Image 1 (spheres, rainbow, N blue to C red):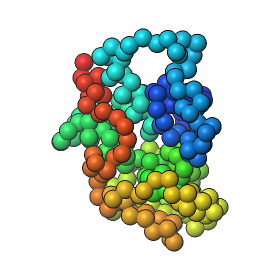
Image 2: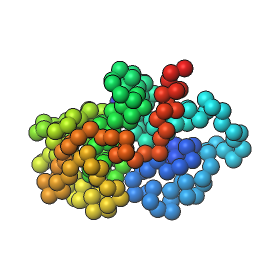
Image 3: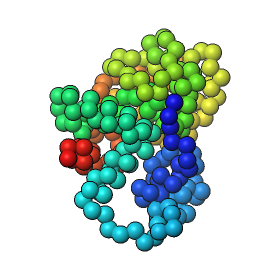
Length: 207
């Protein structure tokens, strides 16, 4: 399973903002943005002004890094979004939001999408009563996502939820006692609180 293996904090520094890739660390003074808020590399402090293409590229890279997907995956999501009815940019973000690892994070079960990906990949969750180990699985309206009864992550989930670093969006419904959540509806753009200008991504891929 391909994934980014280098330092996560470099990604935040490259985008010049917190992408919340490392969970609790991002809320402390150890966060790389708090300590070195400039791009990584020996020329980080002397980078020139971005071109129009550079601005579009940065938005695409930012979205990829927030959701933890690689280029080939991201391009596939864009093709799906383009084929659907509606606004392509919003369709793209909606597809990314419906990934199972993101839903686990949005429900508060995981401190970050990276942790959510690991939890799902290790088989700690079930969807509609069936064990699932595919983080990229796209959930649908009405799907029930629940921690497996035999999982040893009960305490970890309680700690993450009690930390309360993120509010459960309206398109999801959380039952903390049962360690489960339900997809109530498809997420709207207003429900997707990420700092990405999706129209710039559409313009980039439309060239």
